[in-house]
Length: 351
Image (cartoon, rainbow, N blue to C red; front, side, top):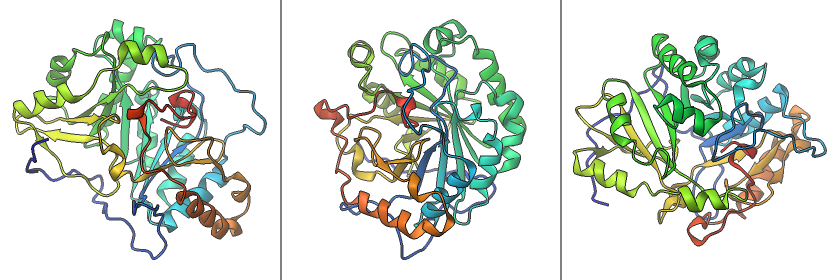
């Protein structure tokens, strides 16, 4: 891709620094990748039935010891990551707002020394009523899933007639002072694959970072993947041809290639996991809602951490176990080679 010059400086919430904490103890793998970003699932329950994730709705697994991490366990795992240089925590699901203590969890993470970004990814159906509380608790960044701007197609993709509720939630976030909301769109070739003009019109006067995410093949989605996968390359080519510029990443940013344009208040992000070199800048680790460390969204069964989250005095052993696991982290997810890993669906470990 043509090297582009960044002419824009990233917006920051509340004047917080985005530089990783300076500490002699860091989470680093054998490929010298440093991990400043924790994606922490707090539930795998979801009330939507998205075509690409849980088309038949959520079904409990019935696995033994499947209760979700409680607030004290969440606090301990976040403290350990923060002490090893992590500066950003994203609370995921399932749908994280389904937890009755979601706001308390936000507050607990936000007050952790060293954490300067507290984000969530939500389907947005509760935002209009609850986002005020989330912001007051310390939530700095919000990602909302909106796979179509057509209410009927939104209903078809998500299984829920909640389009206007989600839109109202996004508008409420702006009303209470969020400088930017990120909106996730999973590219589905036969459904929203040609919706770029509508989305561009929507973000021209709104501070939304619209992120097109390529459909990823999971264990339960082989047929859907073959039918609906669409590369983001054509979108990127269109953006470059029309004057969009690539934005420089910060250390704890996610994997999106973000483009900006002087005539647009909004931004466009592209997440293309099948592109060569996608994993070279990996900076994030995942912990599931039941306390397993996942080195990759498409990795193995995970590393058990929960036995070390029972008492405050176990942080040293917890850090040691995570560091040991990082020595086994692969250089790539190998999606491009047809590997789908052990992840049954994206809700199982927080996407």
